[in-house]
Structure formats: C-alpha cells, structure tokens
Amino acid sequence: MKKVWNLLLLISFVLTLFVPLTGIHVHKLASLLFLLLCLVHTGLHWKKMDGRRAVVLELIFASFLTGLFGLIFEETPIVLSLHKVMSIAVVFFLAIHIFVFVSQIFPRRKKTNHLNHSD
Image 1 (spheres, helix red, strand yellow):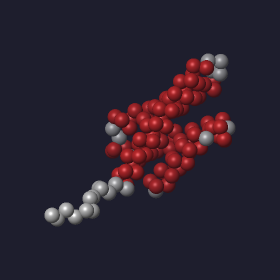
Image 2: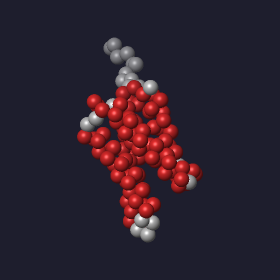
Image 3: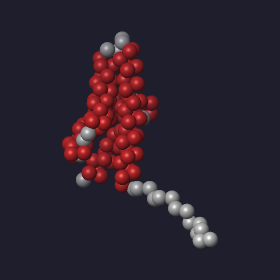
Image 4: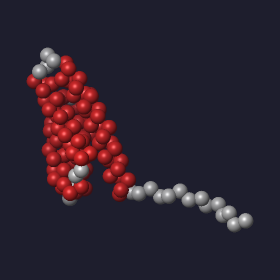
C-alpha cells in the first residue's frame, strides 16, 4: 500500500513540475493532490519524522500557499517570485529526500580491489 501512495506522490509531483506543458489548471490540481498526498505520506511515516523532514513539509505547504496567494494577488509580482524560489527549494530538498530513500532500499556495494597482492 505504501508503494502505491509513493507512486501517486511521485506522479503528482511530476505533474506539478510540468507547468509549461500541462498549463496552470493542471498545475494547481496536481499541486493540491501533491499537498494532500504529502500529508498522507507524513501520516504513514510519522515515527520517522524529524526536524529536517518537518522543514521540508512546511516548505511544501508554504510554496502551496504562495502559489495560491499569487493567484489571488496577481498585481503583486513579488508573491509569484517568492513562489518560484520556494518551489525550486522544494524540488532540491525532495530530490535529496528521494535519494536518501532510494539509497536505503538499494544500498551501494562497497568497491573492492580484485587484485591479489600475495607477494
């Protein structure tokens, strides 16, 4: 079940990133779905929640709110600029989160020297 939620989370994240291809309406729907799935994901992994992960969740929520306020206050370009900066930070931190998650599932093998040095 967690794999299905994680896959839905990934799909909604990718749809959120494809704003130039999908348009603003799909972006807003995908970002709302992404926010809701992030809350479900946080609920599923509540015991592993620490300060760093809480900051990522708060940054996602703040990015969503600035995007929403950017739609409401179209005359104020600083709000959309702040949304863009926060969104880039969210992508950066989520990439780190996904890398750590994948590294735990598929650990790297240690490099070994296959040369036999029996002199």
